[in-house]
Length: 98
Image 1 (cartoon, helix red, strand yellow):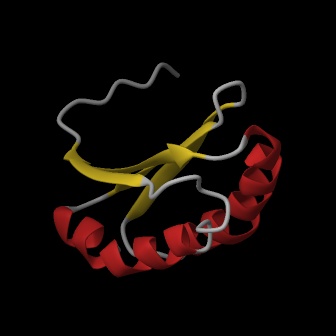
Image 2 (image 1 turned 45 degrees about the vertical axis):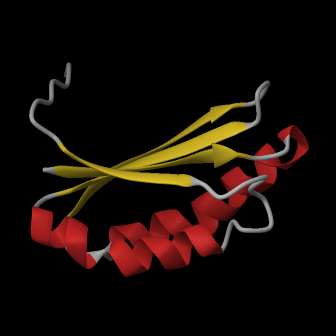
């Protein structure tokens, strides 16, 4: 499994707008991508930080979504205070308590 982590700073008063945009645009689109497993949205309202972590089934699926991810991030350009940080990781362990 592979993970993409996108993080950045948003003006504190724009956090709710960023959440609404993510829910309306990113989430439905992510669900349509091949190999999509899950995604989480994280916020720190006091510091104006926002992050998204998406999981992809295979490295090929992860790689195939690079341009898709760029197009999603571009929709937040007016909200980010500076360019976001985008990182990719191989997931080597996962534990989910059910």
